[in-house]
Length: 303
Ligand code: AFP
Image 1 (cartoon, rainbow, N blue to C red):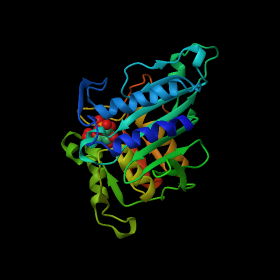
Image 2: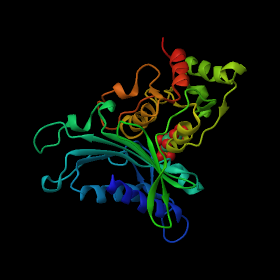
Image 3: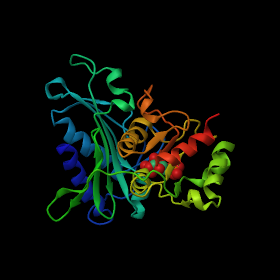
């Protein structure tokens, strides 16, 4: 956790001065494994985490949304954990000064011996040792859980330390906000359209109509959902039959957080944390947030 905090402070500083002092805004010119343009800050965040963690003696492998293949740490410096990250989520928001973040998961190496096997890298979401995210917003915050409660820490930039500001966070049982990229409506199936129409109907008892909020950085949309309740969705659509969000780098760590805060996370048909991925870049549809709202979504989406 200490190494993660050091990386977070370095990235936070760089994010806060984006636009001045150096050439950090804009694209690198390369395309990542998901076919997305890589921003300079994506690359900076990725290499900062890899550099710090690979020398820490605590991890044996690092997988990242920005790297096609895992980094395997040489035996001499290898530890017993696998670190999984989206180093800078929401990177299309970097250039417009909107909150972005880092998402991470930590798994224990499960195979004996020094070799890192595929089973170490492709573990069930529920087997996380810890999951969390850092949001670089109006303040920089770390939210994490190691399986007993969710705790939030805010960076005091004047002394460079994180302080416990949000102990034992709980998500409201039901909210009144839905969060989804509604521009995709014409490529959704009818179940998804019916669900959104339900949230828009008027019914005082169930707090409808819900408000619509969508930032386009999942970390930020999720952070609001955790604090205020409601539901964040990235459904499957005709273009992306498995949705757009990555299981290991986005869905699973936030599912671990939300469940530990009393909420739930589902593909619409199954619990996210029950999934064992078949490759490190696998995508899943995602419905995450207040328990009652996710239950409502499932009732529309299940056959
Ligand atoms: P980028 O990091 O490429 O901006 O993607 C962010 C993200 O994975 C997630 O943070 C957002 O919720 C989602 O994509 C936004 O996707 P749409 O632009 O398709 O709504």
